[in-house]
Image (cartoon, rainbow, N blue to C red; front, top):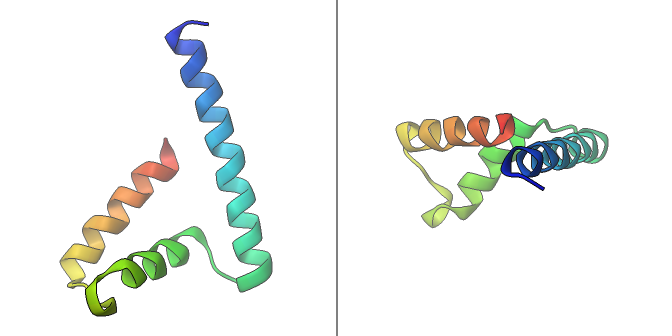
Length: 68
């Protein structure tokens, strides 16, 4: 297997997981992926607080992850 085939397999696997997670979040909690990431980052932050600029940066990074 070459690097391109490995990347394509990874991308397909990542997309399947992302779709499954999105479906579960919507069905069970009525949350989208952005809502999930927002709550996740706030939950991981010291005292559950982040400056808006910090949260924006983290959310932008999560969008990149979703697009990979």
